[in-house]
Image (cartoon, rainbow, N blue to C red):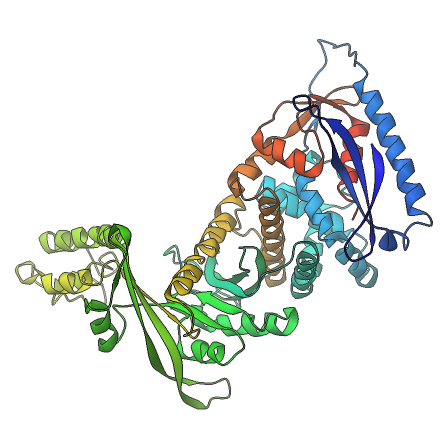
Length: 568
């Protein structure tokens, strides 16, 4: 291994520790980056002579590696008992590399000086982020299992909960900090941004300022918190914001858009979202900004003119496999009340793109089938249903009425008739969807392809709810709830960047599963034995210059690896 000095296009000198390797098959030599060090001018602020300093570190690494290669002789005592905290995770070093690449530790250390708590904010944030990614659960569980990582944890459980209140104060500043680091390290494509809203439930009876009863995505009666999330054109998170559970989805868009345009400088971004955000107020604001919008538009809920245009067979371009599309220029009249309470009435130049998909047609009919079956079951046995459990099916029954107090069906059974006309009306629009955009000069294909990118944010919400287990939330104070979601956002950004660095070959679930399984157990005399290796760890190792396939590592070697990924 040796210290490599590379002159970058910007004229700055970049240092890295590399190792020369020879391919056994091709016999060609190549260099592999073992450790990224940083720009020389930045390092000179910290070290009197950075080159001499890191040359010394390289020599120590070579010495440690030479010692590693020596055969280890361990005498096993068959009467030895299992000790506590002997099994530790090693895979988290991949997450630590990005955590430190984003300089989150520097952000928190700087605020530590002014906030002045006795505990270490960075140690606590680091533990909670790594635990959220690899072993999601409560904060208490994370603290109890803190020894599974090769990291210092000079704090107690009370310190950890107090730190949540401090961390919550930095929710906007840390989002901006990480955004600027992403631009610096990876670049950001914010020409198009994707936005959507989801909610998280709380198993509590009493509501408060943030946790309010609203329309739950999971149809639960519990109080919820709304979270709006924005991704860039590559699916990498930009920012998030929490809203009370009773906030309508459409009211969340402008607050976060205005915030990130003001703080993040994304003024020219085209906003893509679904039909729930497609209101006159949102469309008017975005259409009159430097970016614009791409929204979906419900056909069944549209006006008579739109329905007629969709069903008119003329003008469609027939595509392969039964697909078809057409578009038109359209003037949209919007009416709404602005933030000052004034009535606004305006026209927006808009393009409407209609697209038909046989797959969507089949899916719509399959989704409706359960409601149709339930409607027929209600007609046959109305005594088994009420207003609550007949939701979604009642629209297909003529003249159904309920008792105002009990919710029971009071229409006589012999008067309950299936509404064939309502079913036929819904089926007419199966397979069709409409996309509207203020970018009326763009091609149909651009509009369709841009909107299709919205799947990334839907998949991201699944990651937060399943892989990161952002719910249920095990804290109750509002500031600690804010901290919880900030931790989840930091974790989400880290795993998305790691996934991107791995060329998006692996799912988030697969990456996290592999990193969680990359563990070792203390054998004896500071020697740890590893028992898991797979293709993900192969690629992660190639990316970071770490050999995850080694069966044995000394404590000194592990500490070198852990320290090595933090040099940013």
